[in-house]
Amino acid sequence: MRIGAAVTHPGLRHPMVLASMGQTLQSLTGGRFVLGLGRSAEWRWKAYGVPSPTLRSLADTADILRRLWAGETVTYEGPAGSYPQLRLPQRPDVAPPPLLLAAVGPKTLDVAGSSFDGVILHPFLTVDGVRESVARVRRAAERASRDPAAVRCVATVVVAPDASEQEEALAVRARGAGYFSVSGLGDALVRANGWDEQDLARYRSQRPLVELDGLPADKNLSRQQLSDLCEGMPAHWIPTAAVTGDARSCAARLHSYRAAGADEIILHGMVGDQIAALAGHFTADGREAADAR
Image (cartoon, rainbow, N blue to C red; front, side, top):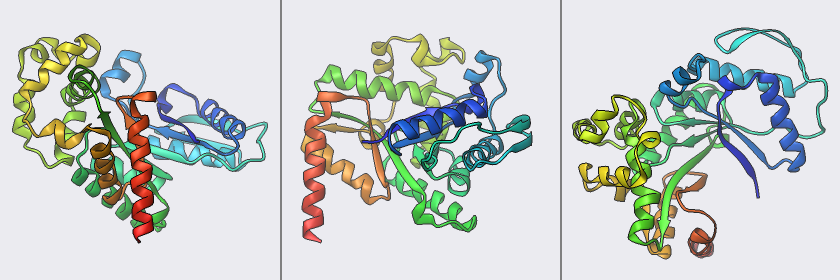
């Protein structure tokens, strides 16, 4: 079993802290740690009083970490910060952890393919959205003279197997309502899925969202209020971008994401015993498919 930070934000942690944390966890887990980085949203950085990370700063951070893990002394001046001299005093005898980038927009997907070991795709992408995102990441890797097949593509899928109506509302609908309300993020998800952006504008015109005046919905509305907002979405959004129903049919849907190019899947929404049956069906179906080949 691997352990991942998916994701952490480099703008809040000095590269020495990130590098030390990454190599320590990689050593403690026997090489089973994965470090995911991400941009988050503009409102968060304004609230925290720190500069918003850029695509260049994320790519440069990945390079700084790799150089530190390789034992180099790093001197850097650029969008990721100003560092006259960085060097790790101790380095464990273990390979550095893979670096993944959380991405949804096309430019961030390009950076994941050109500068990172893999990508973590955002929740609420359809199967076609994942297929197109994976293809873009691999094209970017190829342009950067990297092996496209070596870049890991991880799909994050919101699941609610064998869930009651209330469980599904909290795990899926409320979560989706929050994501689609966020300026920039919701727009990127809609474009990635090939949906009508006018539908997104109509969704955001609902009174509870308008009255927030730009404040994040998931931090200021109750889960029930968020779930209710889904009534203002097109009927196909949630069913095609999340996985619900009985555990066996959910497992089949997850395999469609694998067939679309996802190397791995992060299950999001429900946890523990709630997804045990789904995991069992997914594994069994995968073995049957392998036997058939």
